[in-house]
Image 1 (tube, rainbow, N blue to C red):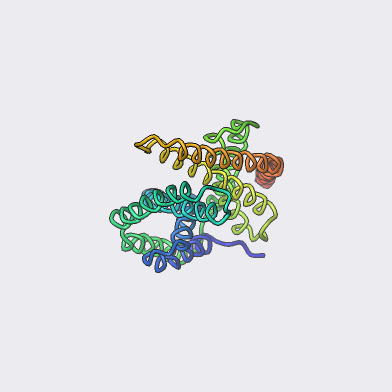
Image 2: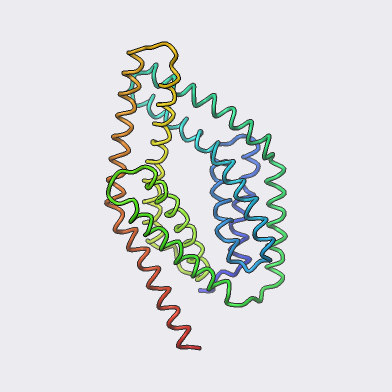
Length: 296
């Protein structure tokens, strides 16, 4: 199977980014999430395309700004969905969940206003136009060295090593901050592995699915942790002592924390499979380096 060249790798991710912009301007929740994911995938590919360093850095900074600003709103969108789940489950005292929901709804509305005040939809279009020019240049100049593929290999092994180190640091204890570091490292490794699979023409591998399962579990755990923080903030903001409300909030927090621990246990069962993916990538890197040395 033919390998995907630099233009193909960039253009595929750029098309995903631009396809979502119409829905983003209309306030579509799914479009916002997919635009953010697309911006992350674009950031992953830029450093290995052999672009002018200044161009790559400039675009990388602008995309990082997009990712971060969208992330604030996306987080609140997810919290609103979680609150709906809590309400539908019937497991929790309705007034308490309702208060949490109102607090999140207010913060969500303000975050959306700030997003489009500081990052209007026109800015997304301008970034897309810049990237289209870069893609056009890559298409016109198809010849390139093997350097970008070696850079991709190096980036992939770096992502694998970073993830293994993060999992080692997290250990077996339920430590939210360290698990957050694992989640971020896992996400970056998955995106890098996707790029590598496309660049070599490899079919979508089970390894990517393994990473996605781990990412989904840690993502859900992280969302619940953020919700717990919001609930505690609400509790601290209660001006008049209300023992019933405090007890209900404590009960809600305890249940959410137990859910987090169950998710942590699920990830611990997945962790050996995730570590095995990291080890396979590192072995392939060593094997590839040995072949190049032998050929040289």
